[in-house]
Length: 113
Image (cartoon, rainbow, N blue to C red; front, top):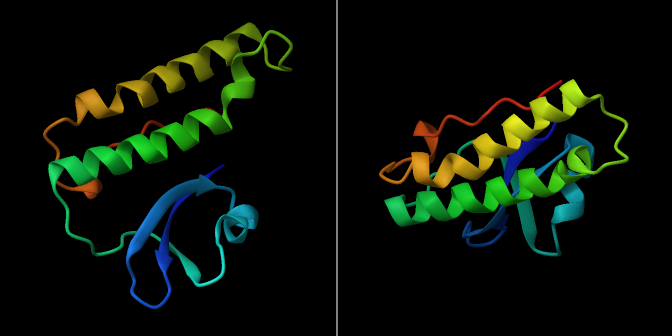
């Protein structure tokens, strides 16, 4: 299961990007001078920033499960349908949170098991 992380500049604590990855792969998302943190980072939040973060994390989560929808995936039709529903919920996140002012208020869909 993937977790969400925030990559920051180690010296300024400026938010550089948000990533969704496995715990074991999180350091692969960092360059020299960058640090990755788990959980909430105190940053100025506005609706525009929240929507940007939602889209970034959503896009990463969608990319990580693209394989579930290809014709030769090892999933059953039922499992593929569960993943399709999850992916639809991810795609709907920006529109269903268009007035959200805090990333903590976003309810992320649960990844199928």
